[in-house]
Length: 277
Image (cartoon, rainbow, N blue to C red; front, side, top):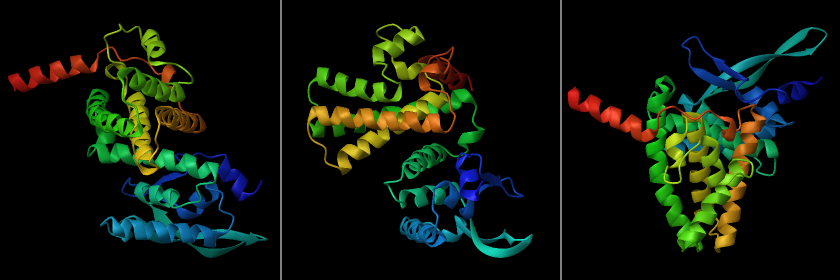
């Protein structure tokens, strides 16, 4: 089995490394193999575009793209030193965003690293938060981005409330394997007046946050017009997020457990703590 075939069996998470300071990084050589770059020079071209994007965003490239070397076998047990880079999650995100979009694995990488990068941007120390804190943080983000998504949908031609309901259902159907909002409520044993998003764990909320933000950006970027075209876009984005979850071996959103407490309950408990503090 070739190196390329071996790396294909691994997910992006499985090729993650930790340095002596417990900081995560990815090897550029391993990432190139997962992303199906047969020619190192082609991968370097994408990496260099990512470095430029990093600097244009106001970040120091050397914080995210660290020069390194790697040893490879050249035959008969001999080894030689080759160029490598240790990449931050943000660097990986920029590389896949500057990769060949025609490759399915590039699209998967874009989704994976964008979701994880977004979680880190969401709130400092996200990974160290308790589950309830994560839920509250992502739910607040979701509320803000749903406003922006509604605006983008309106610009595309989704005007009437019934049309917006169809538009929202399209996103859920893509992400939840054909289930509508009502279907999801029934699975969660919710009443008609209860908001689905208030009864999701952090993992399920994160998937929905990415569905919303990416649909919003796609509608605006591609200047999509027409309510059917907008709904189709929402469905396709939701389906792509679902596909990525499946590729990474994750649990489908409809199979994730419903938390015992709703977001409203958590907010009330937080308010009481703040009053008594």
